[in-house]
Length: 527
Figure (cartoon, rainbow, N blue to C red):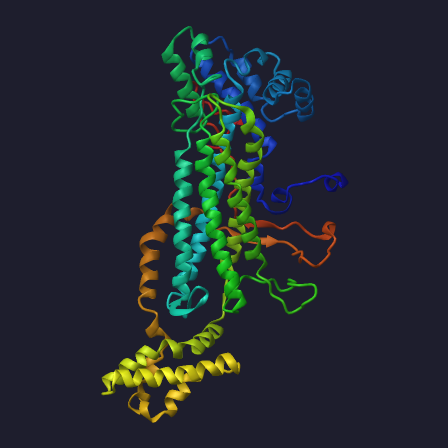
């Protein structure tokens, strides 16, 4: 256990990430998937006439999970080749099958195809989480659809909106992210069985020039891996543009989350909205009264990392030479898992925030009262004109009184007393009885409530329908916040990671063997 604290551990896994996403990019998932892919290849090759026996396949199936990682590490130290190290390790526990493991394949058969499986399964983890965030925020928007609040442009008070309408601005971006993630997931194909430079030459030789069997082999393995299509052309690898496509939608979602959580932090400063705050939570070791928006701050911090990771696949794709160069490998080992792990963390945290957002209507009302008299001046002028007044005279009266009230606010630190000055000026006697209606905040919010209702009905709720069965999952963060100035002993602080209630824990699998109809049992991979 002590060894855990003597070397660097990525906080993405040790501190934050969900178990399902951490497993998705684990060595266990990776190398058992390699073995399952070798089984699929052998099954398809046998079905197409190569001399592979049922006993060999059964032997491979019975040893999918029992990986000797120490042996694999020793083999890789000697061979300097990770795939061949695992071929030898698998062959050691499957001696009769050893001659046909990896038959006709290149390293990217297991490497790239496994990456595509992990990307697909990563999206399948993220999409329900994003749906739950959208659902919680939609409920929030509906609840506060008609609660007036100050709008802000340039972070200066502007025309009123509603708390729910502002939430719909967040929702609109999240809905775009939802569609982008779903599209990226659906666009993924399998690399399939393509050989060393993508020409399938080794398989054409195995099947003695039978092009039909080579195409059947590619199709059968692709189908067993749970993909509808494979890329028709590849080099040694699938195009690294696929990684750009996958990670760009995650980075874009990171920008969305950063904007939402920045807004929440700004509103928390105004004391209008707060994220959940635990009963015994400490905001600052020095200032006991502090209620820092630490969840939103964490989301912003990690969202920046997610956005920054996007530079990796862009540069990697641009520098791949001809059919392939290996300078993509070390980079992708980091950038692909970290992007999905980071996205997973911020969605879990954002779900926790949106499930417990606290609104303070009285504070919002006070801020409106402070600014509304200035915003209502045009309404006052129109009312005076309707009552028989001169527009220019009224404008001048309002201008003078507004400047006097502004001086009280800015120079004396007092409250906005424009309304009291209007009430005290005999000039405005014809409209005094109308002041309450003229200053009703609900008359300043336009069609915000109607926009919320239509947006939720037409765009948000239909988007969530495929995830109805996965909505009953609540995120509770188990953590002890380390304030930046606390000096706390890191060994005494619990990890900050989401605890999932009623979460679905599924590991899917390869489809049944197309020849026998029998499932691959232990050789299952998530479909």
